Length: 375
Image 1 (tube, rainbow, N blue to C red):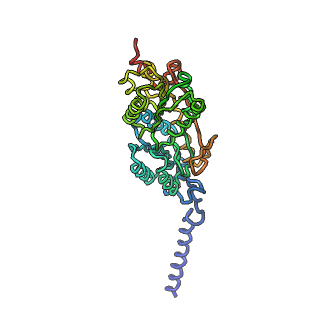
Image 2 (image 1 turned 90 degrees about the horizontal axis):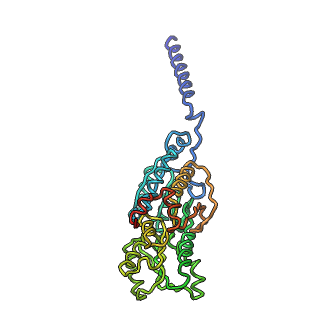
Image 3 (image 1 turned 30 degrees about the vertical axis):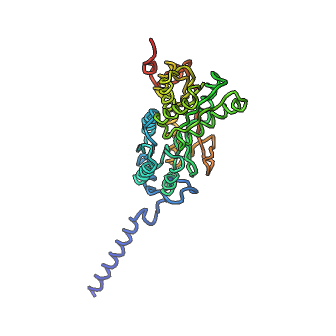
């Protein structure tokens, strides 16, 4: 009888303890936690983010947003500025950033982006080397619940989430208006950018929008028009040599897609005794281009305030990573979708306003710009 009583007490004690521990289970069963929100859109990114649990802590301030910035290369001076300014802007917003440069290698850029995704980035900002081939990166990012922003250069035929750049057709228009204002009639040489860069096509489109009516009238003849592989100055030099050879050194104006290609063209013009004798347009407001403007060998450049671009892209990247809505006042067709876009205005710069623009903004110092000018 005593044994039976003791057994009953043991059973009752065990049941009581089981009840206590089940009550202490807390959020496990009685108060299930809500499913964490993913960064990706519901339509484009059906798979949850691999770091969805971490995203919940971001909303509560427990972990910094991590931004991936995949860059084409640092060949042009301006991309070093973009890198530094973007990094500063992201960090000022309280986020971290991983930056990689592919050195103009498509396969390397894809691999670097895959690595960033595996490292748990919350948003991918991409400057494509090849506007077409990086579509694979966009798919991989979206499958991981990560949105993609095209920075400065549009990504073609892909479901990108946002495009932040300057109005590149306007860049071409500003170049052509400046040169036709000086040479309304004559033989023109066009040195384009890289055929793989969508911006090069947009710039050319803007140039020809201004030139075509004059071409149709017979006032202007395009005697040479060629792309410059990888935007390399050495390739621009070869193009300019071909243009002069084909026309017996008889040309009247040169429009180059950027300051690096303009520098290549001017190098050849100097060798032929033509530098400063005919107008040359560029863009990017590189220091070398600005220096050539003040000494007279380059006529103009197009200034794109990179600080403004970097800060806007950083702001929008962090907002998208947090799942917030962003305002995009334009749409640009990339061959597949109408991409929400933020396009900033470029500025034409020549000798008359160089002090009031790139120098006043602190883009370059006056001392550096006028370094080679005659005292």
